[in-house]
Amino acid sequence: MSVPIELAYFTDASEMGGAEAYLMLLAERLDRSRFRPRLILPGDAALAPMVESAHAANLQVLRMERKAVSSASVLWTMFRHATPDLVHFNLPHPYACRLAIATARMAGVRAVVTTNHAPTMNPRSYTWRGRTLLHVVNGLVDVTIVGSEANHRLAMENYLLPSERLRTIHHGVDTERFCPHVVGGFVRREFLDSSGGLLVGTIGRLSPEKGHQYFINAANLVLQRFPDARFVIVGEGPLRETIEARIRSAGLGGRVILTGLRRDIPELLAALDIFVLTSIFEGLPLTLLEAMASGKPVVVPSIDGIPDAVDDGLTGLLVPPCNPERTAEAIIELLDQPSRRQEMGEAGRRRIEGAFTLERMIQDTEALYLNLCGE
Image: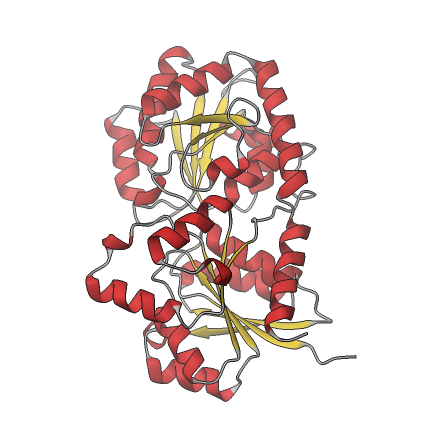
């Protein structure tokens, strides 16, 4: 029997989000007879859920001080001391992990993989020095994974990544954990005043790219038609105080509710009547796929990799980005038609089962690792 491949997952993230959830799904579900994974991440308190999940999965974890993550000498020593066969860098944005990728190569790591979760970000948002560094470091990567065909094209256009070094591996969802049979009644009672109320929600990091201001504006419009509806925003992030202030200034306290981080996401999705995203840009959001796997109709912007998963009018409704009026119209359209919501939710579940399962994501990623390591 061959010796398991030594594999390290590396992130320099400072908070939890969909990219970090993706990383943990990979690390936890790998075939341990073929791979010996470990997790390398900063010691930020916000990442404690990753550490808890890793320990529960019997994963080795190395936590680094934040300043060490930006120290070439510390990173080089770490990679050199116990050189893994392959390092998979998780990039919630394209500029993440640049120094770590370069030092891993200098330390002798055989194979380097990245997952670029947001190749849609305009590279002009960086300085010319930053763009030059991106181009140089991208040349040190063997394969960059993207989550959709649209992101494959955008990675080539925006970051000049050659097609032969790009691999589309659709994000996957645990279809047993996220499914229409999960009971969400307790969560509904937490947020709704009556059993006949309607609950609309969004899940995501409270950061600028998620466009929560458009969700709040859309909610305000929907509440004029459905005053008993409630809207929940699930997540944490740097814009929490700004979002709270926006809710107060709109007079929506108690009707648009910030929940903070939640551990009961399957139950929360089960409680929703409609799942909504109002992002300005995305890769292919994991929360969208989880909502579809849960049998929920979705209202989402027609951007980036989202149309790869959502068939407009069949599994959900696509709306223009940054457009609360159209978003509100779509939500009202579905709230008015319970049978259509159910049909869309069922079609969304079938879409996930056909192309976005966790099993397929793990199998495709393992095959990539084995190919890069010559096995």
